[in-house]
View 1 (cartoon, rainbow over the protein chains, first blue to last red):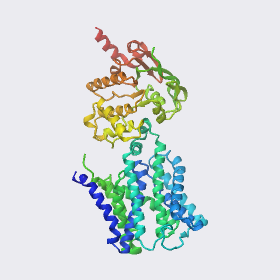
View 2 (view 1 turned 45 degrees about the vertical axis):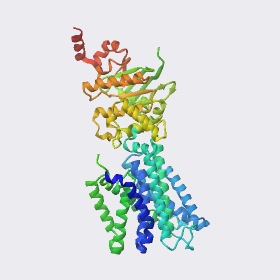
View 3 (view 1 turned 90 degrees about the vertical axis):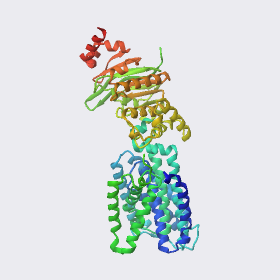
View 4 (view 1 turned 135 degrees about the vertical axis):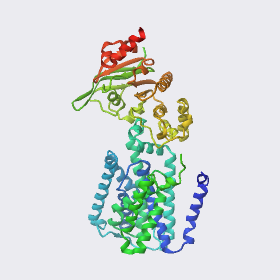
Length: 315
Length: 249
């Protein structure tokens, strides 16, 4: 109970800490790691809206990430449009695709929905692999320009850090808003029992589409950020199925259907994979995945509702 | 004469070769309690699901307050003013009692505060106040059924369809449930009650319809129906006849 009373101070202190973090820790690797954690946390938060609150497990979310990354990059390379505007275009495109894909897929329930999303993810992956106009399998290198906020490019990591931090903050605020509004109640209703939800007038398909669209929007936002941060995208990095699975794993590890669960998941899994990759080099390639697998097995056996359940008050 | 709120006209539902409902006609008057009886497999729940939009009728029509609702999906049927409960209770397990009822109350208001106020009223009415913050999965079966009824009431429906609310309840709990139902009826809400427990529904029903093998075999006041030889044969059986004789003698 003490934890709950001090919750708001604790959150406030965390926000302040992360705001001054780049001033305290100036090592490039540390900042890079934090940026990655925030980006993946953003992805996990996005996935959680659909997979956690609405209970529709998608394993094709890399599609929206890829659309976000490709849309802003292509618009920038071909027409010189600012990636910020490209990001908005990417969000719109991702939402449009999510609705087109969602409508038929939401006729399926449970595992069949998950399988359908894997198929969609792989189809889009293959299309981009063979689409020469957008680089095909080689991918796209973003032209390097001078530091500029408008062009979304910086030499230093610090601006990236703050941008992704505020994007993450936006997703947290949105999730808290969802949780406390009618939308959140309805999404949880659909997750718990779709027949019962429909019996009390909830238009289940419509609400699933809303969740999917919100989820796709944040994922696409992260996609544009990734493109601008790494300055290179190819189907293997932004449309890779492992990315979709990672989003799901982080949320599941931390605790789905909660605001803080996906954040906890990202803060554990991403350092794990980055550190093992950095220290073991090529030899460590598969190691992070093995640790993931082990963690998921332990979690599903002992804490099926995620790490967050350690902090929740007992009923 | 009361006005008809619900009319089922020549409703037929087939599952492959099996006719679950054949040419069923029934009406429910505004503000009355209609009992829908019949032995297991008589087609009660099928008829119920056809009205509520979970099954699509093969033939026939369902008219609710003058509107044809035959082809509407469940959520739209609900929005017309028909609420329902399920034979196998379907509450939102991980939500508290209050949150469950709020989900219903949200039908008429976007605002959380309004929904919460409405939900509290309903919970008070059903005497569940002391369990308001308990997750629904921890409730007993009678409480879950009552919660499901509460979620339906929070929708402010014109008609509530109850699918075997009494099944699995003890005699005392049945008495309590019957009391609640008649109070809901006093509020002007029409009730269609599918019931297996005949004794429970007979005292409060204004009209009873009996189904057997998917067809309507009797209709009328509880008194008339329970004396109908076809009903006694099909459903009540010798046990009930003997019991009646004992009571009279």
